[in-house]
Length: 286
Length: 346
Ligand SMILES: Nc1ncnc2c1ncn2[C@@H]1O[C@H](COP(=O)(O)OP(=O)(O)O)[C@@H](O)[C@H]1O
Ligand SMILES: [Mg+2]
Image 1 (cartoon, rainbow over the protein chains, first blue to last red):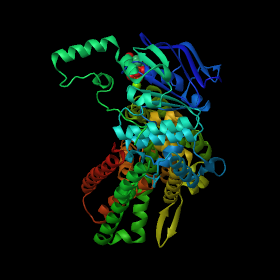
Image 2 (cartoon, each protein chain N blue to C red):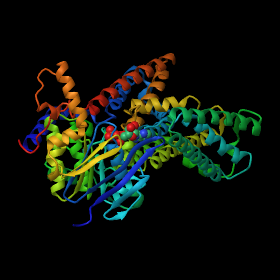
Image 3 (cartoon, rainbow over the protein chains, first blue to last red):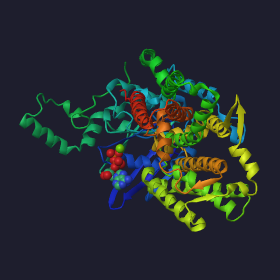
C-alpha cells in the first residue's frame, strides 16, 4: 500500500482552556473520500483547519505524503497541494466568476510593474475548467454573488481542482443546500475523487457522506468515536453511532411514549436525530 | 448534469441585460454629470465659455485627484479621514523646509513625500494591527495632524501660515511641473487638470487590468476569503493608505506651488468631500465595489455645480442642498446594486 496523501496521528488542538480536538487519527488516500462526521461543535472545522494550515496542531503528528509537517498558513498548505473550500467558500460575491476563479493566482502578461492580468486567457480557462466539471456558465463575467449556493460550491471546487490540488478539503459543502443542489455538489465530489484527488468531506449528514465516502471518521465533543472503512459499517450503523447509539434508543423510546412524533416507525431512526432539516440526497441515482 | 446547465442558462437569459448595465459603477455619475452640465449650460452664459470651463475644471481637478485615491481605498474597504489635513501637512512640510531651512524645493517635495508615505503606512499598519475600523484610526491621525499643522507652523513662523515660496531655489522648475498654466481659447487652464486626468487613467488601469487591482476589489469585498486564497491582505491595504497619502502630497504640492503659501488650517473638512465624490461615483461604503472614473466624474459634478451656482448668481447654500440630495440618491442606487449582486440564491 502506498503512503497516504495525508495522515494525522492522535492530533489535538486547544484554544486556551477549551480542548477543541484531542487524539484524532485518520488517513486520506488518493482517489478516496474520507468523511468527517459529527454534530455541531464536534470539532470538524477545527480538524480541517489543522489539515488546511489555518491552525497549527499542538499535539500528535500530521504527515503529508509521509513527511511530518507543522503548517503555519493556508498558503503553505496550498503549496503542498492541499486546497480547502471553507464553509464561507473563500469567494468574493461582488467579483466576477473568472476574477474569483483566479484570485491569488492571476495569469499575467507583460513586464514587471506594467504586467497585466491575461484576461482573455483567464476567462477562457475559467469557462473550460467549469465545463470540465460539468458546469456550463455562459457568462463568466457575472458576479459570483448571483450564483446559487450549489454553483458557488462548484466554482470553489473547480478552482481547487484546476490549481492542481492533490487533496481537496470541503467543509460542510452540502449544509445549506436543498436536496437537488446537495446531490449536484456530491457528484462533483465524486468527480474530483475519480480524477485521483484525495477528498476530505465534512458533513453532519450521514446520508450525504455514505454514498461517496470510503472512510468515515466520527467525532464527538472533540474526540474520535472511531474511524471506519466503508466495508466495515452500514449506513444504519453509521447513523446510529453519530447520534450516540444507546442515548438515541432512549430518546426514541421517550418520544414514542409521549407521542410527540405522530408516526414513529423504526426507519425514522435513521433520519430524525442526524439531519432533521435536510432530507437525504441520493446522488447515485437520477 | 444537463439539467443543471439548462437551469443556469435559463436564469442568465432572464437577468443578464440588467446585470450588465448595473455592473458599471460609474454609470449613475455619468448620467448625473451630463444632467448638471446640460442644466448649467442652459441656465448660465458663462458656464460653456472657455473661462467658465477652465474655472469648473480647476475646481474639480485637485478634488478629483483625492477622490480617485479615496475611491481606491474605499474599494479596498477602508476610509481615510486624515486625507484632507494631509494635503495641508505635506504642503507645510514642503514650505517650511524650503523657506525656513532654504532647501531646494525638489528636496523639500521629496521629504514631504516620504513624510506622507510614512503617515499613510502608519495609518494602514494601525488599522490592520488593531483590527479597529479605519474610521476611528484615521480620525485619530486627522486630529493629530491638525494639531501638528497649527502647532509647528506657529512655532516656526509665529503665524498660522507659511509663505515666501516664490523666492526659494527650484521654485521655477517645480512650479512648472505642478502649477503651470496653459492658454486655450483665451482662458487659463491649470496643469492640475492634467494630473487629475492622468491619475484617473492610471488608477483605472490598475483597478481593472492588473493583479493588484484584483486584490483591491477582493480585500474590500471579502478580506477573509481573499486571505484564504493567498492574497496578501495587509500589504494591499497598507499600500492603499500610502497611495491616498501620496495623492494628498501631490495636491499639497500643487497648492503650495500655485499659491506660494500654505495656511495651517487648510484641507480640514475636505476629507468628507472626497468620500462623497467617490460615493457619487459608485463606490460602496462597504467596500469591494467602485470605480476610479466614477470618482473623477463625482468630483467633476462637484466642480460644475459649485461654479455653476456662482455663475448663476445664486446663494451658495444651494450647493449644500444639492450635495445632500446627490449623495442620498447615489447611496440608494449603490445599495440597490449591492443587494442585486449579493442576493443569495439557493
Ligand atoms: N478559535 C476558537 N477559539 C476558541 N474555541 C474554538 C475556536 N474554534 C473552535 N472552538 C471550539 O472548538 C469546538 C469545536 O468547534 P468546531 O471545530 O467549529 O466544530 P464543528 O465544525 O464540528 O461544528 C467548539 O466547542 C468551539 O467552540
Ligand atoms: Mg463547522
